[in-house]
Every structure is written in structure tokens, then in C-alpha cells.
Amino acid sequence: MTKKYFGTDGIRGLVGKAPITPEFALKLGWAAGKVFGANGKGKVLIGKDTRISGYMLETALEAGLIASGVDAGLLGPMPTPAIAYLTKTFRADAGIVISASHNPYYDNGIKFFSKDGTKLPDEIEFQIEALLEQEITCVSSDQLGKAFRINDAAGRYIEFCKSRFAPDSLNGMTIVVDSANGATYHIAPEVFSELGANVIPIFNKPNGININEKCGATHTEELRKQVLEHKADVGIALDGDGDRIIMVDENGIEVDGDELVYIVARHALTQGKLNGGVVGTLMSNLGLEVALKKLSIPFKRANVGDRYVMQLLKENNWSIGGEGSGHVINLEHIPTGDGVVSGIQVLAAMVETGMSLSELKSGMEKYPQKLINVRYADNKAPLNVEEVKQAIADAEQELGEDGRILIRKSGTEPLIRVMTEGKDADLIVSVAEKVAQKVREFA
Figure 1 (cartoon, one colour):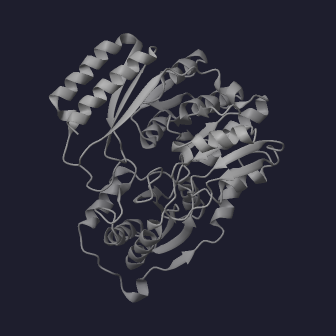
Figure 2 (cartoon, rainbow, N blue to C red):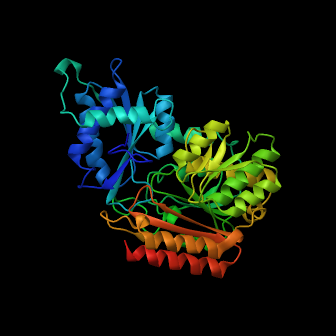
Figure 3 (cartoon, rainbow, N blue to C red):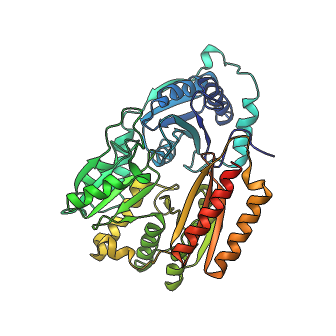
């Protein structure tokens, strides 16, 4: 059975076109309300990031939920992991996030959390999809849901994040924080400041259309510059909805998600708090696997996407996993990836070991990787073309045992990702470019 609307990370699209229209959001709210309120009057929380279309989609979802007889709690701009946390804290039946993560402002998406703060199981998504094919039927006036705003949502989440670390632990530390003009603009600087750090906030003035614009976890150029100018101890870059983190060390060098997973796992091991092994993805740098092996830490690869990392963690009863893109998960703290909490874990390792970020990451040697994104048209399927398949086979033979190639579709954009990795930096670049060019011919 194939889902028509739900992808690996909720529902994504260009605002104003299928499936993300006000009409669709209205029906989605109603369908979700019918599912989550099936056993009596329910309560669903709605949060969003700072992109301008969030106002429109929030209102439409709210109306749909109310029409189904379910109450809607409005959180306002909040990070995705905060909505997961608050859904469980307020004992809501579900949480809804309006966000397109690291994508440009004109994209948007809608995803759900269960009452436990985890992503929805497939069977619930199928139930919602089935209702989307039906006409909306509004409950009687006396059964309509109500809307209410939760004014202390930000404060509650800030206190939760701070509770992961001892008070005043960051005294004397200077941190540059890039909030990507996104959902953490009023959260992240406060958390690190209240823990004692001297915080230099950048990209924390959202206007609805500047989210992720040459800033945040996907664009760290300005963050690296600011860290060096202010002689900061560390830089922290979050993405638009706050579930990804990329850091910059004291030398202005970017530290990606693979390296952060290594630091968190190694510190947990030294503290006697590591539960089992670590889960990465097919895209995780081979250097992470090698470094963990030296520490006798088991490592497994999941399909790309934090949903699959989470699934494999639960199957093995492990806690720590993540992706090079900056999703870092530690189930000992929160049941989803959380950029702010992950940053706190790395800072805790720095404070408790007395080591700089560059020293902490030095135990892992990254293998050279080359990633090329090729955009393709909706009516094209380049990976099904025989010439492309042959190019990939030739690449595998050329790389041999000292390298690998991975080809995959993006889960959020019409992109084919061509990734090569190996000991020979020149070779992996050459091979990646040849395969990417062949994909372009049929894209």
C-alpha cells in the first residue's frame, strides 16, 4: 500500500500548489482531528517555524481540527523538537509542525508527532490519508472544538533545554549562535545565555522570507567568520526548524553531524552512559565507522532520514545516532533530533573534559567525500535509465575496495544526490562528476 501524501518526513510542497494549499490544510486538519479525536474530544497542538506561509496554514489546520470537534492549542513559532516535547508534556493527542526545515521560505510542510512525541506510525498516516479522500462533515455547533494559545510554550521549552546541563556551566565561554532566522530565534540564544555563556546571536531576526537564506546549518560561512572575529570558543548553526545542528570550532572549521555524533558517543562512553552502539546512515562518513570501531562501539547504518535512524535505534534498544547533515539523536534526552539539546551535549563534553571542540573531534579522521545534487523534472526518472545504471556500475568498479558510491533521491526536494567517498580525493571527485553529468543528461 502506497501513501499518496505522506513522505518520509511528513507532507512537503511548494505553497499554493498541490498538496500544500489552504484547502488541503483545512481538510488535513479535519482528517487528523477525526483520527486523533476518535475516542472522545481530543486536543492537538500546532507549532510552526517563521516562514510567512505558516500563518495561513496554521489557520487552515486550526479550522479543520475545530470542525472535527477537536481542540487546537496554538504554540506559535517553535522548534520542531519543542513541539514533540510539548505534545507529551501537555498530554495532547498529537502535535503538528508547520515547517519545511532547511528549505527556502516558499516551501512548506506539515508533519505530525504522536502523543509520546514520536513520529506517527504508518497505520495512523494511512487512516488520515483515507479520510483525505472524503468530504468534510462538520460536527454540530455544540460539539465544535476550541482554539487556545499556549503563551508559556517558549519558556517551558527553554527550561527543559537548560535542565540538560548544570546551571552556570558555560560561564566564561563565548558562543556565536546562528538561528537561521528560523524557529529557534527566540530560544537558542536564551538557552545558552541563561547557562552562563556570552552569546553573540546572528540571523535571529525573521521576517517571514529570510529563513535559511544564506545562513543556518546549510550555510555556515558567516558563522565561521564571526567565530574568528570574536575569538569565540565555538559557533552553533541551527536550521529553520531547529532539529539540525552544525558547529564551528575555535579555528573557524565546520564540525558536521557525523563528527558531533562521534563526540557525543565517545563522551557517553567515557561517562559510562553509552547504551549499546551508534546508528548512522548510508551517507555517514566512513571515518565515523572506523573511529567508533577503535573504541569498540558497535555501528549500524540505516537508510537516509532521521525517521530510519530512529527506527534502527529502537530496534536495537540504543540511544545515539544521527546524520552528517546535522540530525543528532540521543533518546536519553528527547525522542527526536534536537539541535539545541545536541549542542548542549557537545558543550558538556567540552566543559567536562577541558578540551576544545577541535581537540574533541580529532579522534575521528574523515574520509574525503564528494556530494553533487542534480535537480530533475517531475516527469523524469533518471535512475531508471540504462545509461545511468551503467555509469554507476562503472563508478563502483573504478573506486574499488577503497571507496564507495551512493545514489539516492532526496526525501524533501526533486534532487538526485550523488555521493562518492574514498581515500583518493581526486578520484572520488572525478567519479562523482562523471556520474552526475550522466544523471543530468536524463534529468
